[in-house]
Length: 286
Ligand code: G3P
Ligand code: CA
Image 1: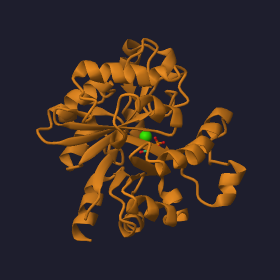
Image 2: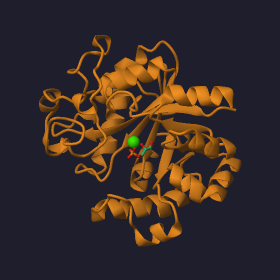
Image 3: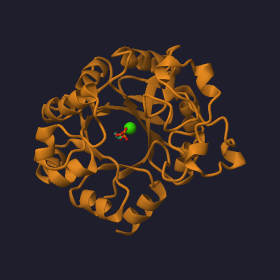
Image 4: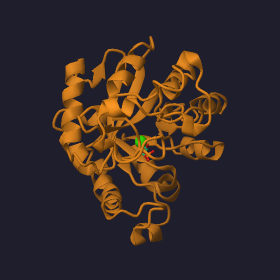
């Protein structure tokens, strides 16, 4: 059985991540779902951006949380990728999406779409991020029992176990995906060295995402586990056990044939990829 395919930050291998173009391309590529990261702006609007800062993916600078939505709308979130955005995808401007924009875009897809929302922590707003998201979704007509909104099935992901607890007050366990930090050998886990991540707060969160995160998954407090590929490679026994215990496993970010073969062999039910079209063809022929 082929896994469900989520476009990671949209079809971010093709167009700039989280842009209108990336999400429209994901729909055109036949992705089953899309993944998007959310932050709050200074005026508490939910925006689809990965980093807490603006430098990497826009021509702006500073923290997302220090800008109003109107200020962010002035920025260019697509040119950094160096790929021209076709006019039918909105041109180079008009590429930043609020979560409300993304819902509109997905609701017009004319088919069922799974939307995986990642709550980005550490957030300067703390767990107000969760509260604002829930309030927003309820206002949009989200049904907390089924976690659906029209043609959308919505799930929530975070590395932060507190986020899962908070969302679990209203959302069903089957809609909660605890992300597990992508660390490879146990030595790395012990040394708390996570690539370029140096901030103490982030390192602490990643440690909690492994220890408390695994515990939440094992206790079925959340119905989904979201390990990274390197974690899966290093802990295949754990992933196999989760699958056999009925936990839905959503692995990020599966971009190569070798990674696809690894997760397919373990019976993983969902993958997140920057290249949904390629992954669809891989799983169609394997
Ligand atoms: O799908 C989960 C994955 O997106 C987590 O890592 O850094 O890509 O948000 P990141
Ligand atoms: Ca993410």
